[in-house]
Length: 127
Image (cartoon, rainbow, N blue to C red; front, side, top):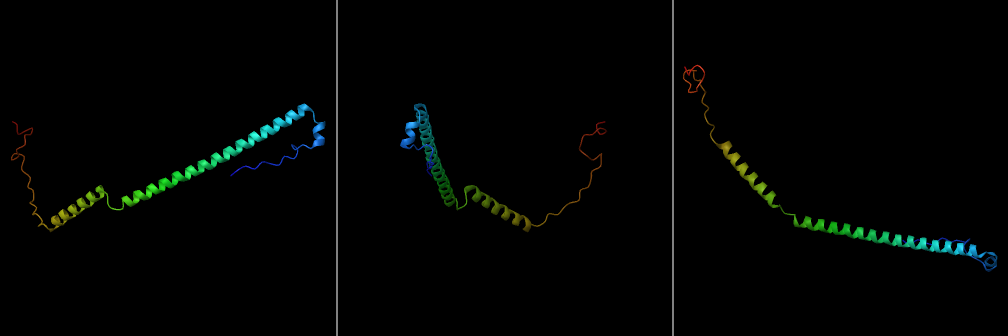
């Protein structure tokens, strides 16, 4: 992307007009041309820099994508944590199945001891 210089018809001089223009005006026109060329050079440099930055940005993005693909290829299998989690889950399932197959324990009804049969130290039993 290179900037194109505009056609400045009013800056072009013909030999007839050059004789009529004063030295001050010639200097002013020369300064104007110098500023225009300087401005165009700046614009071109800026455009070139912009292109370079765009190319660098694309290269960085491609590098990120390539690294992400490599990472994905490397991590296709299960990670260590995932393998441990699966192993723990299988062990828990096996223990739960054993728990279900066990004979249910007989539950004994609780009979409350009387206040006097209790071993607890209380307010009136301390007498």
